[in-house]
Amino acid sequence: MALKEEFEQYAEKAKTLPENTTNENKLILYGLYKQGTVGDVNTSRPGMFDMRGKAKWDAWNAVKGKTQEEAMSDYITKVKQLLEAAGLPA
Image (cartoon, rainbow, N blue to C red; front, side, top):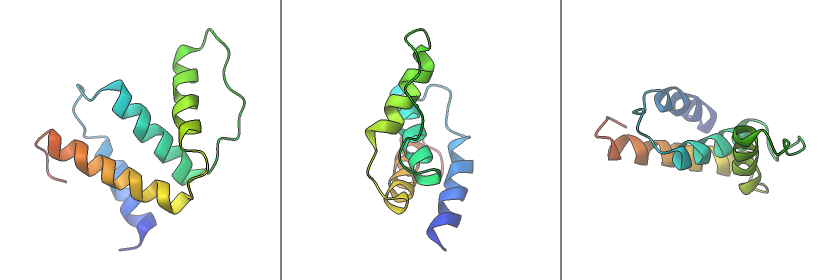
């Protein structure tokens, strides 16, 4: 299976993660997803009153410089870890 197809499959599986998945893990997934689909962060950081937007931007910026393939691979690995930790099939 091609990396992009596997990535898209795990992006769907990520939607089945339990609600008690930590915000930290959700932000890691968000950053890797954006890096894998868009590449390096290409917007300015949101203003000080947009806490959620800043957290998401920071998560994406934290993986700046990774290739899209590396980010996709890391995303798949992270989703697998979270699914296994939740006792769900990876």
